[in-house]
Image (cartoon, one colour):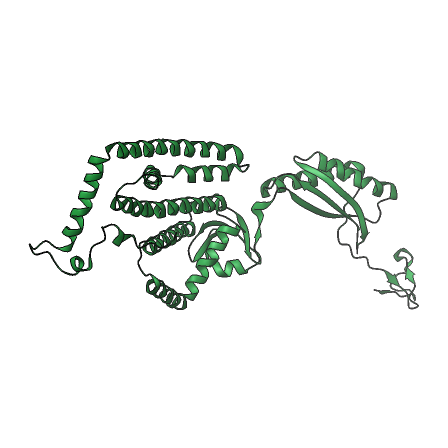
Length: 401
């Protein structure tokens, strides 16, 4: 809005002499200004009653028309905006258009069409300016709160989000107040400079707190995790997020204790969020003995597939013979569990292992385990069959390696 000195314009223009001195009968300048204003409005209402009634009727018609436009705009927004969430937020912002703003807007329009007294026109302009600034602030506040609701999801009761609502609302109304003062002809340069210097001083004095505060805002908006998510916040440390605060986040560790971490430290760490799982990948390694024949080795992948397909929510990916181990022929089985839950994954893993164990028992396939074999060798280093070794009294000897 363009800054207009509206306060002086509310009164009729006085002569310099009348504005500089009080009246002889003791009446002050305010009474001298107010009386002509009231007289001009009264004279207009008496002598131009038809014009006054006509303008009032036009204003009433415009008010009803604006009400219809507001309702139609809400209907159009609800049907035209594709996103369900934004559809409701925009419709709510339109619904926050106040009746008094529409009424003053109607009066402001008709005062430009007719010829009402200047003091009446100035009064309507003054009131409409205040109403317009307040109405725009309500629209902006509604949209900002809608953005917060859209970004926060389940974190509606978090302390950081509540503080963010308060800060944004405060910023909106401070800006609205300064805009209103500027439109009323008040010089706000000094006030803005004072607010800027005060903000710099506060920022320097509370760097650590502000760092955690902005980290909390980043967590709420960027959503690397939210309340109720299971995360790895340190190497080997897993817990459930219970609250995202202004300065710290509270995490319930698996062992039961409450872990409190600053938001800035938590945001700078590498966080693994298990709540975003849609399915879990399971890699299962096992080995069979070297005595297992080639035919049985070729049948093991099919046995593993059948064990996976028999498990709930499990989908087979692959099973291969991967190499020669120290005491086993090694296989690797990979399958997916179509459930994000950890317990569901462990249940499926257990079913697969038991299925493989039963199938191997039926097929005569033995699992390998670490084995150490001792060989006997003669002085020349050749392996000797223990059954051929002579009694201790004999001349032949042996050594163990």
